[in-house]
Image 1 (cartoon, one colour):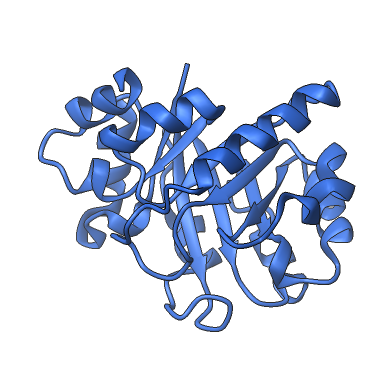
Image 2 (cartoon, rainbow, N blue to C red):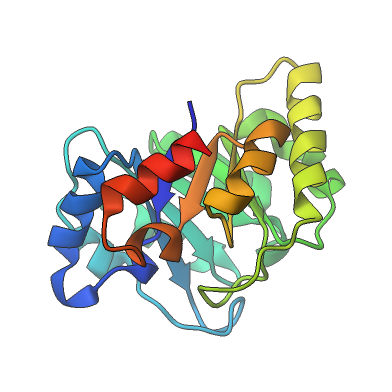
Length: 215
């Protein structure tokens, strides 16, 4: 079944712990943490100190998406703060394999992320080393952007490559995912939907998550 990962970036920052508990109780399996440094992505969000201060509900995974240039400089600061998954952008580093190995050694699920224009060929050589691939359906930097529909076939091609190689790799999709766009993405092979305004922008979180799962 489709897993839902609400993006904390769309939550009310005046009551973060309550917002996290609310989406967990509403049925979300993961919490998506968008870390931006103002270089790789134009916005600046939050980092390890804030993540470390969050109360993680039992049974919920914390999923960090590092939109950071040269993440090898800061990766160790993301260890030991309660993260279950860390996604590194293929475009952000020349040390991708080394970073994935470091993440795995911390018993954290290593993942790679691709911008919409980045071809799948860029991750062929590390596909055996990850537990998840994050495909962006918007350009990284701001929430509320329009969904780039041409990424759906990219999801399908990735699913085929994973199956052909007999791997157990989840596909996460981030950007503009809603009840309207989820169906085509699930059909293509999406396993995890990152949802910002589609969950935190709604008054009833449980209804919003249910709408995504039933789409």
